[in-house]
Amino acid sequence: MNYEQLEVFISVVESGGFTRAAELMNTSHSTTSRNVAALEESLGICLLKREGRGVRMTPAGELLYSEGKELISQTRELEDKIRQADGTLTGSLSIASVNLRSDALADACRRFCAEYPDIVLGIHPRDLSEVFAQVESGRADIGVSFSYALPGDMENFEVRTIEKSSFCAVVPESHPLAGRKSAKIAELREYCYISVGDRRSRFTRAVEDAVLRERPAGEILMAPTLESLFLQVRCGNGISLVPRPMARLFGTGCAILDIEGENTDFGVDVFWTRGGNNSAIEMFRGFIEE
Image 1 (spheres, rainbow, N blue to C red):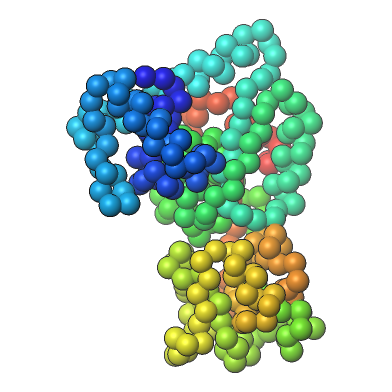
Image 2: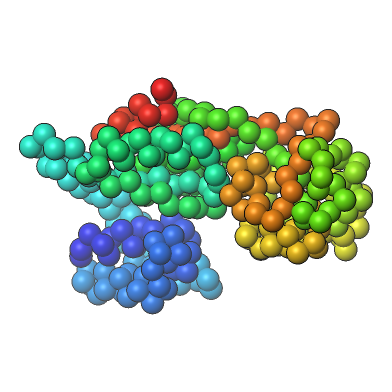
């Protein structure tokens, strides 16, 4: 058993399958599968049962998952202490972030890297539904998400709001509303709507309900990803409501409008586990609290 194989095994368990684990680790499905197979071979026991597209842990797998997570945490803590034994600030800091453009976050990362050049800062874009799980499981040190996507109980986490934001409407640049700064919900109901479907949060559904109320299904176009949603908007196939930080990132070729008469405010939050073992978290914290 080696460290890499153990990390891959834990990722497969937490992501529910080999395909999603491979995506999160930026590797191939075959590499992920081979690592788990090699781990099972070295231990001489089956750890995972394949069930359709998912997996189920065997009793041995459950034990390895529980004890393995603790082992990885202790190993990372030891590595951090060893790197700092000579007084040099080295190591790594991983940030799992929803796809967004945030000036506050970008500035904090820039100043952190300038102050601590020997600490490797990694920013890993994740779906909105995945960011919290990445930090909770220890696969990321820090998370960046929207306040409405975080659990109600964050007692075990430190949370800092780095900026306030809201939902906005995105329309093609050639759209009749494109020359305006804002639009009313009633006006937006007149046009075909583009949504990301089942991957929406409850908050997003509530925001969209004002536009989608009593709308025929034929007037709603489902896009599988944010990138495809903005592509559809740019091509003139409809309009959408999206978080402004995402519109700033993906909205090239679109007009961005405020939504009149609706409170869609939320915070862009940075969070981490209380008492985390990576000392670089406290260093980064200083740049978001200035």
